[in-house]
Image 1 (spheres, rainbow, N blue to C red):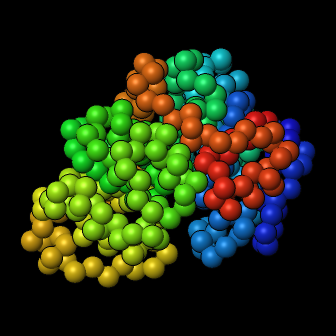
Image 2 (cartoon, protein in one colour):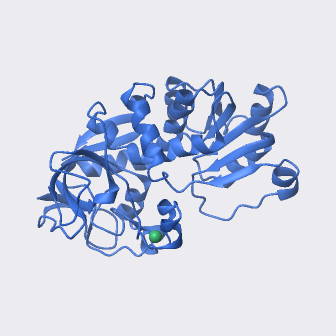
Length: 343
Ligand code: ZN
């Protein structure tokens, strides 16, 4: 089969013929319908500091976001059958640790990530533990199915801050931030304030239902959030930027008793005045590491199936698998939303 392989250190990857995956107990073989490029793939493709320090063995097949069809089931698999339409949950839990036994398998102590610690899905076929192949409705287009993994992170953040009926800000309008805006709209947010420094992305945010867009390279976003909410501050914000300055501005624009969901990964420590910004404010802060397995998947599938959630504008490029270099280039330059690769 054809696959995009990261062979060695240094930038880039190659498309080549590789052996078909061999199933082990509890795994399924999947035929990839569509896959999507994520920031994590970009790190591995570029072989940056993050990639060098995350126990990644080379050579490896890139990619972890995909929709697929089950074409073979391994020994002991009872929950799936050949022909099932699935999307991949990338968190591979051990099933044995404290978290796994207490309803938090998405943050398993021995967590492995599909496509990071295993061969991934930028290929014609891949294999994955059956527990991570989530059946989805046929009504969901394969290109949308390919981005359910990041969408789930956006949905989870909205679940945690209880978006319904609230004024919320979404900081960072990359693909996950944009999907957080769509979800906030589907959840019934009253006002959604989108913050970014990229006009192209802010325009997509507007299309997806952002009430106001704030270019924080031009105006002070904390002051704007206060102004839009008559001096009170927003009920909650989701950070999908990972930018420490932007996160601090988010806290300054947050009302007393407000909620914060953090998704973006800062590359350096954040220094915050806990007294004024968290303690006296009684702010609730939660980190989001992906989807709850599997409540978030159920919510997301239901919303998409009924047409109550639309993320189509986030998918800006659909390329063939062999055009992966162009896809990585588009993602890196931030000149697109989500880039899909079709094998
Ligand atoms: Zn575990």
